[in-house]
Length: 199
Image 1 (cartoon, rainbow, N blue to C red):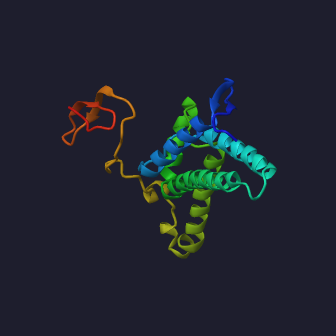
Image 2: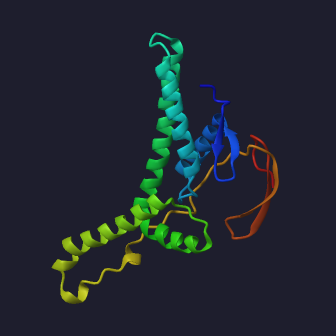
Image 3: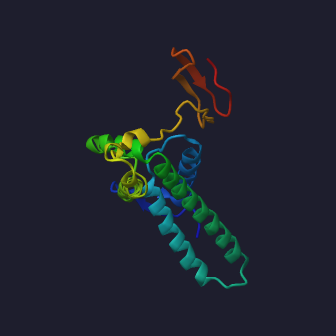
């Protein structure tokens, strides 16, 4: 049940520890929650961590119920399950709220093979838009005069506010990050570990 156990990960047969996968998943979860737009999925990490949870649960069943490690590992499994569930829930909430622009962008990404959505999320988004369109037609448009029964999907689109504030913390020093300031000019800043940006 040690988190240093090595796991097979991805098609490249790269081996990583469960601790590394968990840290990556926690970072993806935090970034997804704090970002106004949907970010590239980390489905490989989710699948890998779900496999690790099953492994941990099998090992817990081998322990005595009075063993202190049992309750500690059960708490850790609950914490990991919460992170995974909240990560997936956050993504679904964004898909439901911004489904039209997300689908439009994802169709372009599919052509370049840079998908942000998993195949399941993409299918869910398509079905969500279809259901929303059918609902609008059945509840509203069918009761309107004939010349007003046109459903224009893009006019209903809600877009994420990309101008909202996003806070970050640098894990390592990075020099020469170019950001656009309020006037539209490019500004170069340096990010220091756990520090404030220097321009």
